[in-house]
Length: 169
Image 1 (spheres, rainbow, N blue to C red):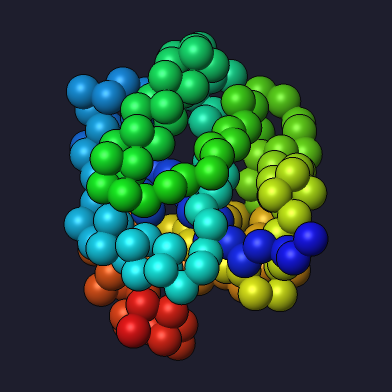
Image 2: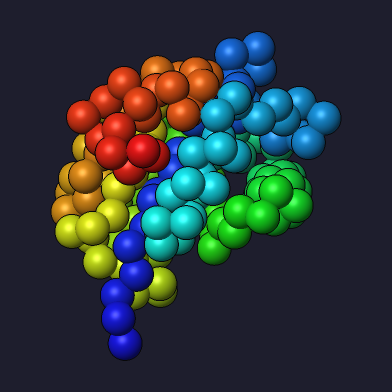
């Protein structure tokens, strides 16, 4: 079986705007960043699959529940599907480093490792798009190339301004 090439995406700050509310857990507060659909459509045409890897420390802090995150991620996957973009899965870490240690919270890599195994990912041909150093550090731990973009920016324009602009050309 041929290995898949993937784009791993951080959620808050990359896919959606979290500048007004940092802990996004309700679809009413979810605002898609500009350029996301456009970028993913181009990448999908180039044969990439998409996986979301997101820290959701608000669960550990008691601000919202695991079910709230699952509902919002389901809404997000449906939103993309309605735009003909298929997100294979959304993985989230419910822990927060102020409360407990874990191996799934970025900058650790357990969620990446699970996704890579589950979807048979070729890490050498895959990328992680994130808006923080911890996204890039976690990705590099498993051999992915990290692309750091400014938080809450137009994803298409942000990728265009990196050395990886060829991905969306």
